[in-house]
Amino acid sequence: MNTTEDEQTAPAELKAPPFLVIVVPCYNEQEVLPQSSAVLCNKVESLIAAHQIADKSCIMFVDDGSKDRTWSIITELHHQNAAIFHGVKLAHNKGHQNALLAGMTHAYDVGADAIVSLDADLQDDPNAIDTMIEDYRQGAEIVYGVRDNRDSDTAFKRGTAVMFYKVMTALGTETIPNHADYRLMSRKALTALLQYREENLFLRGIVPSLGFPSDKAYYKRGVRQAGESKYPLHKMVSFAVEGITSFSTKPLQIITGLGIGSIIIGIGMLIYTIISVHQGNAVAGWGSVMCSLWFLGGVILLALAVIGEYIAKIYTEVKHRPRFIIETTI
Image (tube, rainbow, N blue to C red; front, side, top):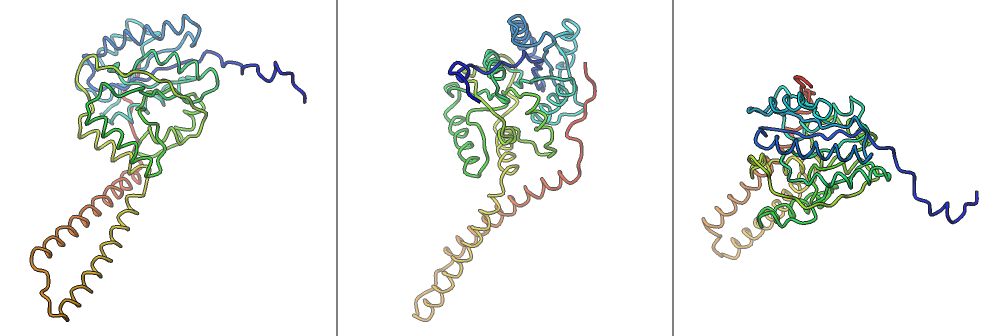
């Protein structure tokens, strides 16, 4: 069928303004919720007024078993503006990734056309949502919020972040550098995501593997508005280990290589010792023996630790326990 030049260059038809749900996981966020709720409410209302999202679009706070007044504040917000503010309360603290998934699942169940996930601390610039909606309406099924720089981070945090993304790439896991969990997902992409049933969630690796058309919305990350960070160093390390072991078996292959290498070195040392004895040379003494023992002992313990990490994941997966339990919703 022949087409004119105007037809070939005509832009694709925009999608209809979506029923958008902004999913915000919260854990002990009583200090920042009054500020973040006001900012997000203004953002939703401005997008509705501009006819970029449907009138019934809303914000869904997910209380991840908080021990402070987080749920009370969410309830108060709902009473003040029931059209905008909704809430999901988990029965126990299940971690950021599971809380995020709980909110996305509930948003899917209420018929959302698209969801945007972001944290309650306002470090992720809500203005990037405008770009995400534009990209979605032009055909993107996933839009990643990506930091345009890391100037606000310490040198240590910048270095470890760069190293983490390089390690994940080397291990064969597809990730988006400088992207956390600030993203837009269409209903189609969310349908695919909810088919993943594993207990050990690493959404930053799962979402890029879905393969849908995607785009990026760049923004400048700010400072936390109030309260304390819920990701100290030990949690960041644990999160990195979770990501690596959830998406790659290469650490096990590395252990195999180390084992083969140790055997080769051991055979070489045995040959060297036999030759030295026959030549009447003194055999290496206590120091070299102890160094060898400590080295091999460390390799063995490290290997056991890595294998144990995988076995622990198998243990949690085979029990098929629910990833989260919703206590109540408003």
